[in-house]
Image (cartoon, rainbow, N blue to C red; front, side):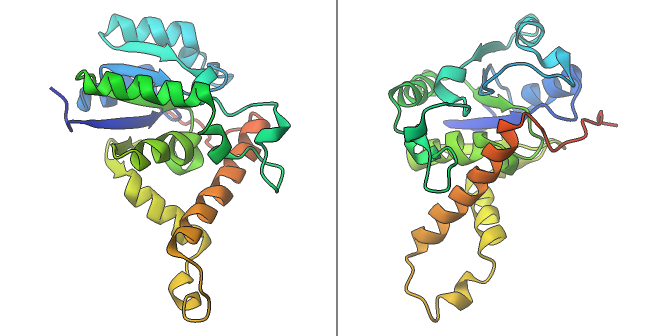
Length: 214
């Protein structure tokens, strides 16, 4: 039934029309879209606002649910901040509502549903759908595939390596003189990337120019 069994997908709507967005969901046999935006509203693309998007997807046989309480990243609680003053995704991942949301998604996939997490950003590395949601699912043993704008796939493992290389391109050389554990680079790279994602999100500014696909 699913293009890839026992896995999750993620997708961003930036640069898409409703039709091109739908085509990618159908390509990978997605049956349910989980909206992880804190605010399911787009100033640039009102067709991706919660109500019209839900109607459009439902009309095409795809379920839709906004789960901002579980997966949103605009949270006012100071105890959730890291030492640099940014929202700490590791702390968010321990919140009861986040864990309940993840458990609900796992129940869905175990029942045979093909689920995609949706947000705005074109590149998954620019979005918490990769550094928070997908990372958590991967750590629980589930495969996560990011549907890229051109319709190809990138695994969470490949994206993780991309993020680590962005911040620590010379880590193998550094290891000759340092004693850092390998997970240090992974955790720190995720933290640095997440800090930048939070900074952009807090200003409600997206990096894409929202060009329609040709």
